[in-house]
Every structure is written in C-alpha cells, then in structure tokens.
Length: 126
Image (cartoon, rainbow, N blue to C red; front, side, top):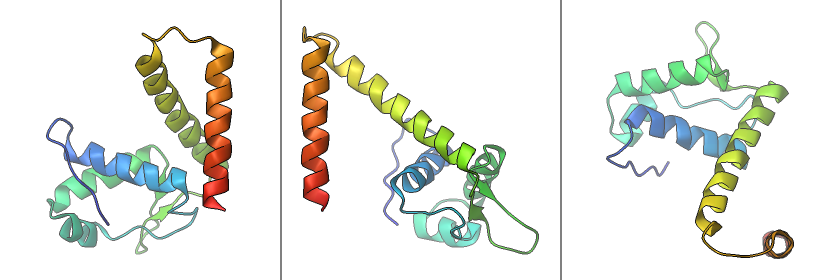
C-alpha cells in the first residue's frame, strides 16, 4: 500500500480518498475485506485513532460496513458505488473544466479530444 500524505489535508481524509480511489478503480471489489485498523496504521505509520476516524467516516458514508467480530468490508450496495463513481467523475470534470477554462476551444473539439484519448487508453489496456 503506497500512500503519500500531503501537509494540507487531514490524514484521515486522505486515507478516505485513497480507499475511494481504490474502490472506484476496482482495486477493491464489493465485499472485499479491508485491512484491519491496526494493520493499516502500522503500514501507513499513522496513529490508529486516525485510521479509526477514517473507517468511521467511511461507514457513515456507507462505503464500508463492519459486522460484530468481523473485519470491515467494502459495500456491495450498487447505489452507494454508483454515487461514488458519479462523485469521482464530477470532481475530475470540475478539475478538467477549470484547467481548460482560459483556453478558447469549441466544445465539439473538446469532446472529440476526450473520445480520442479514451479510445487510445482502452487500446493500451487491452
């Protein structure tokens, strides 16, 4: 597990972002077991209370669930997973639009460039 923390954001939020990225990208599948709180704290060299706070927040967001005397697991709730994907996409689009805002490019050209890039990426991953 390779996480690089920045100094701007609280660490527990960065841990949540890391797991959201892992879930959206398919690195963690629905129902997958999460690392134990202690194990994650040791791996990331952070305070176990920080991990506990991140896990509690993810449980509130229904991204993970914990049954008594069982490890935490990634949710299998399709509506929660779809909402997470929409949230991630919205964030990416906002970043993209902010970055290209000063450039005067017709929307059709932007869409064409995105389609071309997506097509190229799909070829590269096959």
